[in-house]
Image (cartoon, rainbow, N blue to C red; front, side, top):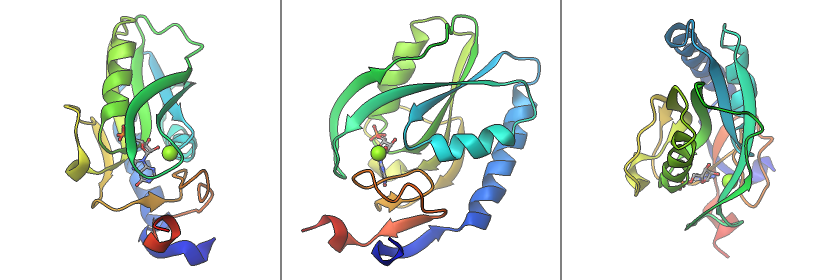
Amino acid sequence: MYNDVKNVLLSEAELSAKVAEMGAQISKDYQGKNLLLVTVLKGAVVFLTDLMRAIDLPAEIDFMVVSSYGSGVKSSGVVKIVKDLDTEIAGRDILIVEDILDTGITLEYLTQLLRDRNPASIKIATLLDKPARRKANIQADYIGFSIPDEFVIGYGLDYDEKYRNLPFIGILKPEVYTV
Ligand code: IMP
Ligand code: MG
């Protein structure tokens, strides 16, 4: 698995320091609020499990499955709700926890969908941001790292469902996906 990594972009130490920082900021901002962390499976699970432990508040978690990508590296532009939330979100303070904000098509669709259910507030925390690829008019409220336009894997992020269990974020060797 490690052989398919061109280079490490963000090490375990860099990731954990950043996640601690984000958790501290979120803890400050959401004091006294009714925080629900909404996570989009599967890519953001690793980030969520670390981030939630860095939040010193009684937060709840819930999951959605949204698919905007097939198994490849290019966005299809099609967003489909595969699994909806179990939680009633009216009046809740929603923080969407995402792995990466790329074109933004997924999150634009998702935030609109959740907004229609009348939460008290809705914000986005993304570990990674690829601003160069943005197509939708959307920004994250909390951003871990802004990264260049390269396909990354690890720490939850996949290529064809693999590499999610890499403990760092790396750049995939192009020869792995350009056949
Ligand atoms: P978008 O912002 O709608 O284009 O899609 C974001 C989703 O695409 C993320 O949640 C990831 O699942 C996937 N994605 C985008 N860029 C990458 C990448 O570099 N590596 C792995 N998955 C990615
Ligand atoms: Mg993915």
